[in-house]
Length: 157
Image (cartoon, helix red, strand yellow):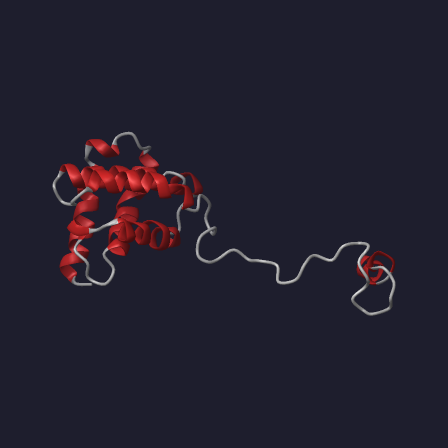
């Protein structure tokens, strides 16, 4: 990523803060918008892509992989998909991103996948490796007794 791209990300995010598309958001969300939107566009253009030519794959990467890593309060985090969609509308109106209106609609659809709470992004869900042990299953110690009458009692202590 070059310095030119970094400057463009910051510059465009700063321009959005005073745009009409930013007005529906609370002051708290607008205050965090610069960092969110610069990170979004940086993620979408990771590897030196042209911000004016981003597509759905790049938008998905920026929104669902890069922005969730930011330390945001939950009420701000809940507004991120709507904020990014408004930002794309702004960039389209300004002629900076091709097909921005369609991409804003795409963000509204995939926004349901965006983690709404801090710490809920950043990794796959944890899955249980083995089936859950039921009360009437044989005890894993090999005694031949039911688990509820054997080692479960030792665990209750």
